[in-house]
Image 1: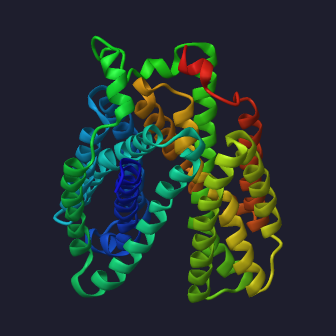
Image 2: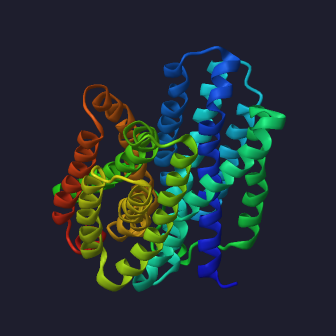
Length: 398
């Protein structure tokens, strides 16, 4: 297997394990709430603390990867979120759960951007879109893997045993460390520098008004991506149960249909991005997402709901595949991991509040208003995207 393929396989596996780890909480939440006798809000704080850990981990490990190497720090992040996940299984109080999930979040937040930087530096620019899409699909694989493991383990062994599975990524980390060499582009950049003082400086993301505007624009686009995904996947099944009278099994079928649409959308987006360019592809998908989400609020009947869900998933989450390549293209190798991790994890942290806002909307209005809100988000992201330059050449040399 050549180096390019190795970077994709490693990054896909890393994101799969990260996605699996995050979804474990969703599947085990009911049991955790019952065991520790806590209310829903206290249980929901677990995800919020995990997101905070991801943000801090993204910044810390992004900086370290720019200073000391992609592969070395990549393996450390995997080991950290594996340990945090396994420790969750031995927690004796909700406070301990918070601490261990924060540790897991630190590792998970660091892994994404480093893997994306590794792939971006291994693949030629005309193939970075599809390579990024291959990696992004890993998160969906993680959701499927978590669902299968939860169905097998939770009814028989309980929620604690589920988190012990989290130790398996440690083995994967050692395999990665042994079989993948350091990024040649990063090594070449190191040879051109006398020291590592300029590598991974967070301030470089705001070094000039132009770079600052680009960084803030990319953060807003990433925030919309996460807010849209969370708003759709967390609330739509229950909204459809209420508005369309769907059963739980039918809403589960909707979830699968939408997830399949998302996977196909990601793979398609990567191909489009390589052929038509990032700006044009994001523009098409953002406008299509706004239209698809808005018109989906008028869907009636099982077939329309299933097909419409797949179409919404295709466009709205298909864009997820492009963010690694998009962000990487705007920043030089010296701060690439820092930029990717910081920007996307800020988006995660802010966009993670979207389900709360959707919940408030549903208390006073209906599904149509929610879909208008989501469509408006994509329109805002489209406007922001138009302000980005077609390439990051002036940032690369700034």
